[in-house]
Image (cartoon, rainbow over all chains, first blue to last red; front, side, top):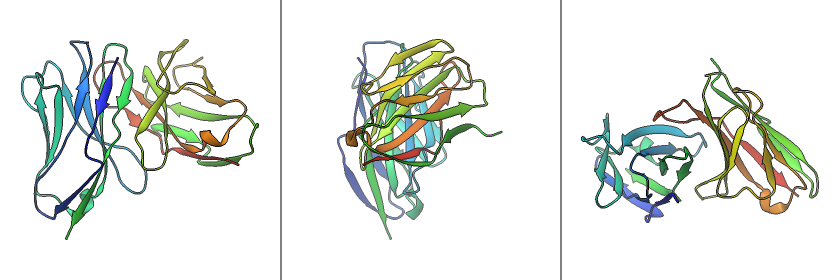
Length: 113
Length: 112
Protein backbone atom coordinates (compact mmCIF):
# COMPACT_ATOMS: atom_id res chain seq x y z
CA UNK A 1 0.00 0.00 0.00
CA UNK A 2 1.08 3.56 -0.63
CA UNK A 3 1.00 6.17 2.09
CA UNK A 4 2.14 9.77 2.36
CA UNK A 5 2.49 11.50 5.74
CA UNK A 6 2.87 15.23 6.29
CA UNK A 7 3.20 15.90 10.00
CA UNK A 8 3.17 19.72 9.99
CA UNK A 9 -0.42 21.02 9.80
CA UNK A 10 0.82 24.62 9.77
CA UNK A 11 4.08 26.52 9.40
CA UNK A 12 4.81 30.19 9.98
CA UNK A 13 7.93 31.72 8.46
CA UNK A 14 9.35 35.22 8.09
CA UNK A 15 9.66 36.56 4.56
CA UNK A 16 13.05 35.84 2.92
CA UNK A 17 13.77 32.93 5.24
CA UNK A 18 14.14 29.37 3.96
CA UNK A 19 11.51 26.82 4.93
CA UNK A 20 11.44 23.03 4.93
CA UNK A 21 8.16 21.15 4.60
CA UNK A 22 8.32 17.53 5.74
CA UNK A 23 7.05 14.51 3.85
CA UNK A 24 7.55 10.83 4.57
CA UNK A 25 6.26 8.02 2.39
CA UNK A 26 5.71 4.31 2.52
CA UNK A 27 5.70 1.87 -0.38
CA UNK A 28 7.05 -1.58 -1.10
CA UNK A 29 7.71 -0.70 -4.74
CA UNK A 30 11.26 0.00 -5.91
CA UNK A 31 10.17 2.35 -8.68
CA UNK A 32 8.10 5.35 -7.69
CA UNK A 33 7.81 9.09 -8.14
CA UNK A 34 7.37 11.84 -5.58
CA UNK A 35 5.65 15.15 -6.27
CA UNK A 36 4.97 18.43 -4.54
CA UNK A 37 1.98 20.60 -5.36
CA UNK A 38 0.97 24.07 -4.16
CA UNK A 39 -2.65 25.05 -3.61
CA UNK A 40 -3.20 28.79 -3.09
CA UNK A 41 -6.39 30.12 -1.56
CA UNK A 42 -7.92 30.32 -5.05
CA UNK A 43 -8.00 26.51 -5.05
CA UNK A 44 -6.06 25.42 -8.13
CA UNK A 45 -3.38 22.74 -7.91
CA UNK A 46 0.04 23.90 -9.10
CA UNK A 47 2.82 21.37 -9.77
CA UNK A 48 6.15 22.37 -8.20
CA UNK A 49 8.71 19.60 -8.41
CA UNK A 50 9.23 15.89 -9.10
CA UNK A 51 11.75 13.29 -7.85
CA UNK A 52 12.09 9.77 -9.22
CA UNK A 53 13.17 6.96 -6.94
CA UNK A 54 16.17 6.19 -9.15
CA UNK A 55 17.28 9.80 -9.54
CA UNK A 56 20.68 10.15 -7.92
CA UNK A 57 20.54 13.91 -7.50
CA UNK A 58 17.99 15.93 -5.61
CA UNK A 59 15.53 17.72 -7.86
CA UNK A 60 15.61 21.51 -8.08
CA UNK A 61 13.25 23.99 -9.76
CA UNK A 62 14.12 27.62 -9.16
CA UNK A 63 13.60 28.36 -5.46
CA UNK A 64 12.26 24.86 -4.83
CA UNK A 65 14.39 21.84 -4.06
CA UNK A 66 13.50 18.38 -2.91
CA UNK A 67 15.63 16.83 -0.18
CA UNK A 68 15.30 13.14 -1.07
CA UNK A 69 16.54 10.66 1.54
CA UNK A 70 15.63 7.21 0.22
CA UNK A 71 16.76 5.19 3.22
CA UNK A 72 14.66 7.37 5.52
CA UNK A 73 11.76 7.41 3.00
CA UNK A 74 11.56 11.16 3.18
CA UNK A 75 11.06 13.76 0.47
CA UNK A 76 11.11 17.18 2.09
CA UNK A 77 10.43 20.35 0.10
CA UNK A 78 12.80 23.25 0.66
CA UNK A 79 11.75 26.75 -0.39
CA UNK A 80 14.59 29.23 -0.35
CA UNK A 81 14.12 32.98 0.18
CA UNK A 82 10.40 32.71 0.90
CA UNK A 83 8.01 35.31 -0.52
CA UNK A 84 4.56 36.46 0.56
CA UNK A 85 3.13 34.70 -2.50
CA UNK A 86 4.38 31.37 -1.14
CA UNK A 87 1.59 31.39 1.45
CA UNK A 88 -0.57 28.40 0.47
CA UNK A 89 -1.30 24.74 1.19
CA UNK A 90 1.46 22.37 0.09
CA UNK A 91 0.85 18.74 -0.72
CA UNK A 92 3.28 15.89 -1.11
CA UNK A 93 2.19 13.03 -3.39
CA UNK A 94 3.48 9.68 -4.62
CA UNK A 95 2.85 7.48 -7.62
CA UNK A 96 4.12 3.90 -7.63
CA UNK A 97 3.67 0.70 -9.64
CA UNK A 98 -0.13 0.70 -9.68
CA UNK A 99 -0.11 4.31 -11.02
CA UNK A 100 -2.28 5.48 -8.13
CA UNK A 101 -1.38 9.07 -7.28
CA UNK A 102 -1.92 9.53 -3.55
CA UNK A 103 -1.58 12.73 -1.53
CA UNK A 104 -0.67 13.63 2.01
CA UNK A 105 -2.78 15.73 4.36
CA UNK A 106 -1.01 18.94 3.44
CA UNK A 107 0.84 21.72 5.26
CA UNK A 108 -0.50 25.25 5.42
CA UNK A 109 2.41 27.65 5.00
CA UNK A 110 2.05 31.27 6.07
CA UNK A 111 4.75 33.79 5.19
CA UNK A 112 4.86 36.80 7.51
CA UNK A 113 6.17 40.17 6.26
CA UNK B 1 -5.39 23.80 -25.69
CA UNK B 2 -7.94 23.44 -22.87
CA UNK B 3 -6.07 20.93 -20.64
CA UNK B 4 -8.41 19.30 -18.10
CA UNK B 5 -11.98 20.60 -18.15
CA UNK B 6 -14.46 19.90 -15.37
CA UNK B 7 -18.16 20.67 -15.50
CA UNK B 8 -20.08 21.98 -13.69
CA UNK B 9 -18.06 24.34 -11.48
CA UNK B 10 -20.74 24.51 -8.80
CA UNK B 11 -23.75 22.34 -8.01
CA UNK B 12 -26.27 21.99 -5.22
CA UNK B 13 -27.95 18.60 -4.92
CA UNK B 14 -30.74 17.41 -2.70
CA UNK B 15 -30.28 14.27 -0.62
CA UNK B 16 -31.03 11.22 -2.71
CA UNK B 17 -30.53 12.89 -6.09
CA UNK B 18 -27.97 11.64 -8.59
CA UNK B 19 -25.60 13.48 -10.88
CA UNK B 20 -22.58 13.07 -13.10
CA UNK B 21 -19.47 15.21 -12.81
CA UNK B 22 -17.83 15.55 -16.19
CA UNK B 23 -14.09 15.52 -16.83
CA UNK B 24 -12.44 15.81 -20.23
CA UNK B 25 -8.80 16.21 -21.24
CA UNK B 26 -7.39 17.02 -24.67
CA UNK B 27 -3.76 16.02 -24.03
CA UNK B 28 -4.09 12.32 -24.98
CA UNK B 29 -3.18 11.35 -21.42
CA UNK B 30 -3.40 7.71 -20.38
CA UNK B 31 -4.00 8.22 -16.69
CA UNK B 32 -6.96 9.97 -15.17
CA UNK B 33 -7.93 10.47 -11.53
CA UNK B 34 -10.84 11.67 -9.43
CA UNK B 35 -10.27 13.20 -5.98
CA UNK B 36 -12.37 14.80 -3.33
CA UNK B 37 -11.10 17.49 -1.00
CA UNK B 38 -12.95 18.32 2.19
CA UNK B 39 -12.34 21.78 3.76
CA UNK B 40 -8.79 22.16 5.10
CA UNK B 41 -7.92 18.58 4.19
CA UNK B 42 -5.85 16.74 1.65
CA UNK B 43 -6.97 15.10 -1.59
CA UNK B 44 -8.51 11.67 -1.28
CA UNK B 45 -8.41 9.42 -4.35
CA UNK B 46 -11.86 8.15 -5.35
CA UNK B 47 -11.19 6.28 -8.61
CA UNK B 48 -8.50 6.22 -11.23
CA UNK B 49 -7.97 4.87 -14.73
CA UNK B 50 -4.82 3.85 -16.60
CA UNK B 51 -6.53 3.77 -19.99
CA UNK B 52 -9.81 3.47 -21.84
CA UNK B 53 -11.87 0.58 -20.47
CA UNK B 54 -9.78 0.24 -17.30
CA UNK B 55 -10.77 1.70 -13.94
CA UNK B 56 -9.85 0.93 -10.36
CA UNK B 57 -10.87 1.99 -6.88
CA UNK B 58 -8.94 4.51 -4.87
CA UNK B 59 -9.09 5.29 -1.15
CA UNK B 60 -12.74 6.40 -0.89
CA UNK B 61 -14.83 4.80 -3.69
CA UNK B 62 -18.07 4.15 -1.80
CA UNK B 63 -21.03 6.08 -3.20
CA UNK B 64 -19.35 6.76 -6.54
CA UNK B 65 -18.99 5.09 -9.93
CA UNK B 66 -16.84 5.83 -12.97
CA UNK B 67 -16.46 4.75 -16.55
CA UNK B 68 -13.75 5.35 -19.15
CA UNK B 69 -15.09 4.58 -22.60
CA UNK B 70 -12.69 7.00 -24.34
CA UNK B 71 -9.20 8.29 -23.63
CA UNK B 72 -10.53 11.84 -23.30
CA UNK B 73 -13.44 11.46 -20.87
CA UNK B 74 -13.68 10.20 -17.30
CA UNK B 75 -17.09 10.97 -15.78
CA UNK B 76 -17.81 10.46 -12.06
CA UNK B 77 -21.31 9.36 -11.11
CA UNK B 78 -22.88 10.05 -7.71
CA UNK B 79 -25.88 7.89 -6.95
CA UNK B 80 -28.19 8.76 -4.03
CA UNK B 81 -26.31 11.86 -2.90
CA UNK B 82 -25.64 12.21 0.84
CA UNK B 83 -24.50 15.25 2.90
CA UNK B 84 -21.16 13.45 3.47
CA UNK B 85 -20.47 13.89 -0.24
CA UNK B 86 -20.36 17.66 0.10
CA UNK B 87 -16.85 18.46 -1.07
CA UNK B 88 -14.69 19.89 -3.84
CA UNK B 89 -14.02 17.35 -6.55
CA UNK B 90 -10.90 17.45 -8.68
CA UNK B 91 -10.16 15.56 -11.85
CA UNK B 92 -6.56 15.11 -12.99
CA UNK B 93 -4.72 13.49 -15.87
CA UNK B 94 -1.16 12.57 -16.75
CA UNK B 95 0.76 10.88 -19.52
CA UNK B 96 2.36 7.48 -19.16
CA UNK B 97 5.50 7.47 -17.06
CA UNK B 98 6.62 9.96 -14.49
CA UNK B 99 5.23 13.29 -15.64
CA UNK B 100 3.19 15.62 -13.46
CA UNK B 101 -0.56 15.33 -13.21
CA UNK B 102 -2.57 18.24 -14.58
CA UNK B 103 -5.63 19.23 -12.61
CA UNK B 104 -8.99 20.66 -13.54
CA UNK B 105 -10.36 23.70 -11.73
CA UNK B 106 -12.58 21.61 -9.48
CA UNK B 107 -16.32 21.19 -8.90
CA UNK B 108 -17.79 22.47 -5.65
CA UNK B 109 -20.67 20.18 -4.71
CA UNK B 110 -23.09 20.79 -1.85
CA UNK B 111 -25.64 18.17 -0.83
CA UNK B 112 -28.54 19.54 1.25
